[in-house]
Structure formats: C-alpha cells, structure tokens
Length: 256
Image 1 (tube, helix red, strand yellow):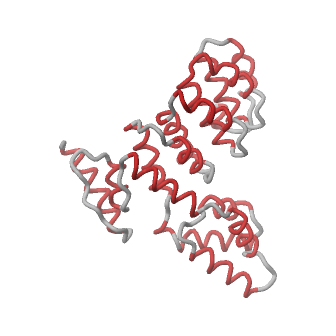
Image 2: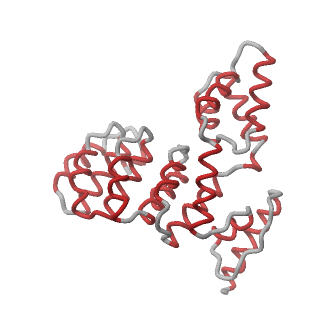
Image 3: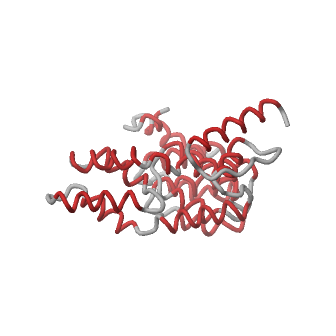
C-alpha cells in the first residue's frame, strides 16, 4: 500500500473515532471512501452497499410524518414544538434534506429549530457516508445498484450528494436498466431525472437521443442542461439553441 493511501486511511479512521462511530479496521487497498464506510459498519462491496442504501431509504420513507413534524416546529403551542423537536432528534436516520430546506426557507421558529436539530445531531450526519457509498459504486462500477442509488438520490438536494449520485447512477447502470431509466425521466425529483438522463446516455448512446431531446422541455434548467450536453456529446445540433438559452438561467451552476 502506498504511503499516501496509508495516510488517507489513517485520517479517515481518526475522523471516525472522533465521531464516536463503530470502528472496523480498514483493509489493504481500501480507498478513503471505502475506509470511511468500513469505519461506520458498511461493507464496501455490492451487497453491503445495496443493503446500506435500501435500509437508508426505508428509514427515510415516511415523508408525510417528517413533514408533519417539521410543520409542528412552528406550532403556536410550546409543548407541541418541543415534542416535535424531540421526535425529530430521535429518528434513527436524520432527515437532513428536509431539515436543511426548513432551516433555509421556513418561518423563523421553524428555521431556528431545524438548525438546532441539525447542529445537535451533526455526529449522526449521513451525507458523508452516502457520498462515500456513491463514490465507491462509481469507482468499483458495481452493477445492479441503480434502483437504490436513484431512491437515495431523491432524498437529497445537497449539490455534493447529487453530483456523486449522478456519477454513481451512470457507473452502475447497464443496458438492462434502459426501461427503468426512461421511467425515471418523469420522477418528481429533478436530480433523479438528471441522473436518469446521464445514465441513459452512458448505456444507450445514440439511442438515448429521443429521450434527451424530450428532456430539453423539462421544467428544471439543471435537467435541460444535462440533456443539451448529452446531445452535444452525440454531435446532435439540436443542443445548440437550448445551450445558448441556458446561458440566461437564474442558476449559476447551469450558466457555468
């Protein structure tokens, strides 16, 4: 093992200990991301990552209950606000995406309490672990993990998680996933639609062109730019006008 890899693994294991997480010894050849996963009890192979992502999604499945609790953070009654705060803190997996949205856009009481919950439960943050799982899937190119990758991606609006998830979807998708990817083009989460287009381009090549052209009319500029870039890579000139229009997007990362 190289000295650089040794230092990376040592750094990850030190962080894991500081977070108070269950520690599993990294194995020779582990990447930084794989060492982090092992340090949090996740085996970084196809079966282990599948189980982790499926369990993670299952723990976050009850969106209605989470939304109700977040709404109660702004209730007129102090006791209701306190109980909602305690229940959110007690959830086995912190609904970070929903709490971050509430901390940024909710009423003042909701914003303050959502930020407090995020700070109080920071040691339970799953974002770094999800990113590590996505990057391991990308680097190892484990097949058969498209469904849990897309399901997990739908839970987040963090740009780093989404970027890692989009690449993981393209890495794990195979030709047999084309139907699932086309169905995902109508998903309510823009990041899932973007990931589906990227993965479809990777597995279908020129056969993805009709899907990419249709996605130029998507309601989200981030999906539209993914479609336009996919067409440009195929040498399809239909991408030119949409790309020029997207230079006027309100989203900085789209204009870039």
